[in-house]
Length: 364
Image 1 (tube, rainbow, N blue to C red):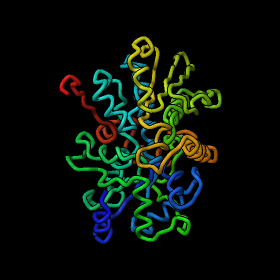
Image 2 (cartoon, rainbow, N blue to C red):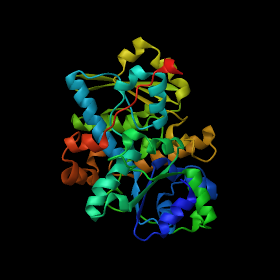
Image 3 (cartoon, rainbow, N blue to C red):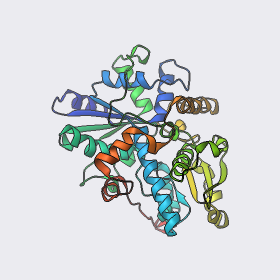
Image 4 (cartoon, rainbow, N blue to C red):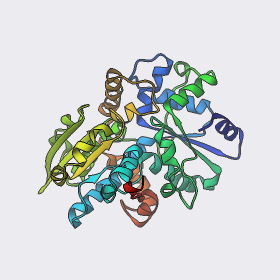
């Protein structure tokens, strides 16, 4: 997003300025201001965004919680009705583009729920707009993301609402740091502020979306909860690794669930090209960048040591958060009670789910 466009919008008093903050940004932005990698600076970043002129700041991890609730319901429906497997996560735009172009036959396998950024974005222009009694076109919605590919995702025709963008601009972690420096706002001196209510509470599961394996762990927690299985009985330690490909198998009632976690696209072909292996999996998580979003293409320079520290920061947030399961988030419950009705309801399917494009690889 061009800074001058943002500054012009900030000066326009008739526009309500809303930002959302991705989980991976809160453990990496500080590196541009002298903090050690992995330092959790959520409240200071919210304060910095307020200093930039944003009226409301929401947590993309809230959108992650909603996405998990929708994805868990979709997985359950596929298991009951004999749907297409393995189901593949839909939160990473790099993965989506890769599958659309390199594996178009796997497009039906992709979970239909939008990414946490887009879920939060569409709820800002619907749920939040309705609550504030303000037209969606009077809201400037900006997403602070760890990945430059999120800019392309925001412009996908399939993700527009009534033909209009739900995300008006994307700032990467590095761009936000540069903007703050240009405005002489030092993160160290920023007042700590809380996320705004309505979409400001997130579970620990929603926070770990920023690390490879985090999406799978969040999904496992929620799906186990749906089936009355205590999450303590499921050992998810093997998910918390930077190995290129790792697997996990467990039982949910009478169902055997086998998951594959693919860390970066460089490791995807060895799984996706193995038809026998693919038949074994119930769910596959693919994150385009090494380490997941903590290693996103919009982050400060990364090394494996830095990625480990950022990931440790996210899991530290999870450890301290009382709410561990996405569907137990009180603000998510309120969203369904007051606006969506139920997971995968008609309204939820209309605004929170999307389709994907099958690209003819022989056309290139």
